[in-house]
Image (cartoon, rainbow over all chains, first blue to last red; front, side, top):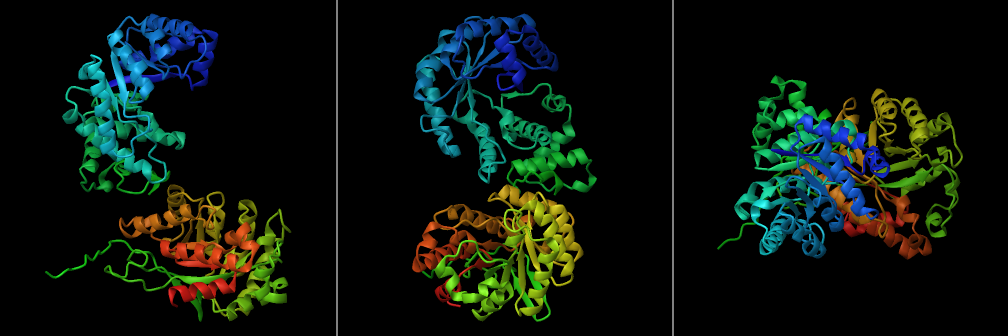
Length: 295
Length: 300
């Protein structure tokens, strides 16, 4: 599993201040920590970036490249900022992200061809997020075929089904299950494409101390279904251990829940029980509540 | 070829809850079919119950066509409650509106004594609602529970901010809790999980909040419907409790209900009928003519 380190993110206050004040130390420390923790890419989430776009991107990309040899993921919806960043990337970069929206197809996708890099393509369209798995598949096929016409091969495209919070009244769990299915069948539908997700969105809106176990469990589940990469927190040691196969018993338990097998909780440690319960909630086997671990 | 209608059997069932004691009891819940699915396998042993609401103070807003059926008893909650009994209710609901710090801030002790007096005077089971102010309810409702110990009253609202203290008093003094959450199924389940760590689930009724027609009834309808489905179809233990729809006051707050009598009765009646169809087990109304109207409509 390819991990795209998510920690350089403008929503984090220290990052947005560092960007504004051109504080290299803060940014480089984040890049180094994630590199040491085993990330494969460093995501640079700069938001819409309406001001000083060119200059800020140049500074940021160079600043991070001084601290790490990892390739970069340029994460913004603004194609001008994307291009400004791509110009300075030393390694083959990842555009994060394009979509099926008209503007994105016209301005973002062609950059992948122009700069010969990989590109995340989400299922979003002008109509918003397709509600059902069938419509997600339809939408992504359309956008990928458009990309192919621009000369971008499937192998350079990382499809993103868009993860939503599991806690949103009722719908969240259905969507979590649907995205597992999406990842499972995408290789049959579009052979050769890669895939990615914004993992931590699955736990958005729930109490902070409960978020890691949801993220970890969902990543194991997606990984089993063939997920190629995830934008995630490499500083979560347990998440990285799971990804690297260092926790085979927990992984096996999560698989059992996915297969609908009965798991005897009495024989398990508290930590293992928590993973089983979390997998069960993510499979929508029981209704979500913030008290899911307490039942 | 003979047509055979499909017949579903469900694995879950709503818990049967008894409210009151002696000859003043009522049973709610117990069904193992979805609302009105009489064609499926299972039964509805206890049809939904209809309740009229009494306030412990004269209503601040005196809508004439809402006050009229009660005449001068409206200044005396006990007489008001007795009047409600004449209209053929299954239970009486006393709302301790005056305990709200924003109203008269009536003391917990005075409120509890009123509940006790009413309990002795009426012949039907009693439901007690606090003002909804989480802090004040945390004083008032435990005192009510103590003063009426052993009477198996239905007491609420128990909310996430005060469930520990109010729930404990309900447990210790032998009552049933109304667990109230703000129109969200995930929060509803969370409160039940936390409450049922110390209170047996057979002593919990769900109040999902009931919005009036035109003021968000769709949310209440689909929430009640979904709680029933998850409880009865998927057998989720934490949603298999009966549901109370406290809708009367919500309806009579609306401009439309206050405008004129026919519109008011229909506003309350349509709201009640909709939530009845969604699966509510107890419905709290304000106007006796709505009670009559809805009983005629559903043929009871």
